[in-house]
Length: 438
Ligand SMILES: [Zn+2]
Image 1 (tube, rainbow, N blue to C red):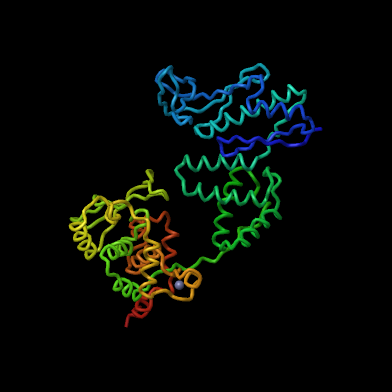
Image 2: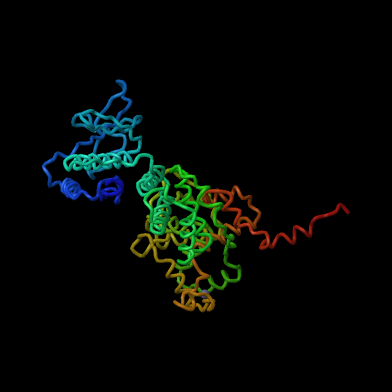
């Protein structure tokens, strides 16, 4: 009796699933398969070897893929005798025996994906041998898109392309998606399942914007995997763009007036007057400042604080008063980090610090959920300094492209969000000054 499905999991690749249709009612097969997978059986597990087929000065060659000390493939390195050599151009191939014949399968250029293919093939062949031993046959379902396997591949691609942030977002979104739809194959997805997913997100109090973002992330993956997404949902869920929140001038004035500790002053002044992201400010080092030109050079960092290598540096001007304050701060404190802790390490406690200072100064609004539940006002947060900075630049009449350059925003659309026309105080003045030539 065919048609049952068995999934085996390979722990090395995050429980990557292999889906095979098997005779589940054949206990001999199942027993044989498990003992094979556990390595208890005498039957030789089939060997799948990974090769880096590459362009060398002597022409195209096939070498075993080089394995690093961590057990992972070293991307684009070939094992040449005892040496590991780098060859830029090439692709990976899996070599294995199938019915006594040697098979070479091209598994692409990306090392992580190639290694995942190698494991997948090895497990599948193992299952086939077990099946033969038990007198049954395995049919790998061809042409069906296994969502988990594909999602893993998609995620690895994103990481390989330096889109780490997008990969993290995608991983969380797709896991949530899978836990709701609960079908292994893409062809089992239906519109009601998608609706159920939206409903589940709403039930979990996801905002409209978050639901929209998760939809974009998961559907981007589905269409990449060849799924006809138009059949699944007529259109993306809608959301209303929230207005950008910025600090008002009088709020800032009273807040800064309430600060007595010079460290607190300089931290929030830097955040407000440079618009740096928290990671950038935390890791800001003195050599990034040029007091002569009054500029600051910065490269974006990911959420772990590491610089993102493929992102260009940006240089932004520092207001004259901040330069003076920074000079004085440097003379007194020195060290490596501009805004480091007393031990000269990056300080990641600014958010609780801000919440505490605001509360102590009596600035809690008293109305928000944060105020009511934790005595921590939601209207004060670090990113709002950056939003205030961006809005300020735009309102000062600096053109959006220059603003984008200073703030390091990835696209113009994001910058334009800070230009909500109703809030432009200058508009009235400018409208008033339209002359009719009289
Ligand atoms: Zn509040």
